[in-house]
Each structure stands twice: as structure tokens, then as C-alpha cells.
Length: 179
Image: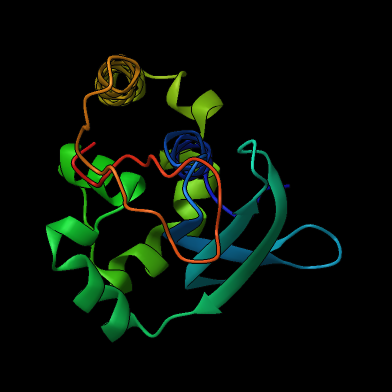
């Protein structure tokens, strides 16, 4: 069982796809602890960090992943800056949904079971409309990624092109939060 909603997990996968060549990926998300018998327990706001080291061919050879629980105040401070909003928070903003930490914690279990669960959303017209909006959002992000890849193949530096990080070799292209 996932510790997040279907929509949140989709955004985590897309973050990974968009930043697959980045030596550092930082995400902010919600996670819900589960009991031994699978029941949903308390939710937390977390910062997850993935750091990768690449070989000379651009293949990842080592990665470190950390999860840090964030206080609500820090979550809200980070997400007050639109430049810091990761994909999931961009989607919630796009959908006109709440992005404040306290409300996100309160709605997390409901989101996992109903409001952001693909099968449940597909059972009503309002849910299907939300799924269409999510699909439009994801499609626009994928189009940006494809356009960035075309620019990159043409040798043009696009938004989010990063300079090499000391001690890390391999590809450095990342997609910025402008996605």
C-alpha cells in the first residue's frame, strides 16, 4: 500500500521523470503511516531528498534517499514561494485546492481513500472532471519536457539547465519548477 494518494504518487513519479538526470531531487509531500494490519494512521508533511552520483557515461552508480518530517510552519513557509512548489503543489494550485499544511494533514486520509483515488474519482461526473483536469495538467508538463528535450538535442540551453556540481559527473540537465 502506498503512503500517499494516487494523485500524489503520480506527481512523485513525474518529478522523478522530469529530474531523472539531476544529481539532487528534493520533494515535499505527505506520507501516512499504516498500522500492521494496513489501517491508515497519522499523516506527516515530509521533505524527501534523493542524491545521485553518476559515472562518466551518465549512469547512476550511487544514490542516497532521506525523509525528514517537517513542522507545519516550515511547510507553509516553503510553499509560500511559488518557485519552491513541486509538481504536486502546483497541481493542487491548478485545481484550486488548498495548499496549507494544516489542511493538507487534515484531508490526507480522505484524499488517499476518495478525493485523490483514481478508482473513486472515476465513479462520478465530478470525479471524472477532476481526472480530466489532472490529465490536462500532466499533459502540459509532459509537453514542456518534450520541448525542453528538443531544445537540448539542438544544443540550446533551456530553463533549469544546471552547471556541473563539483564531485559529480554525468548529465546535469534538470527541469526547473517552471514546469
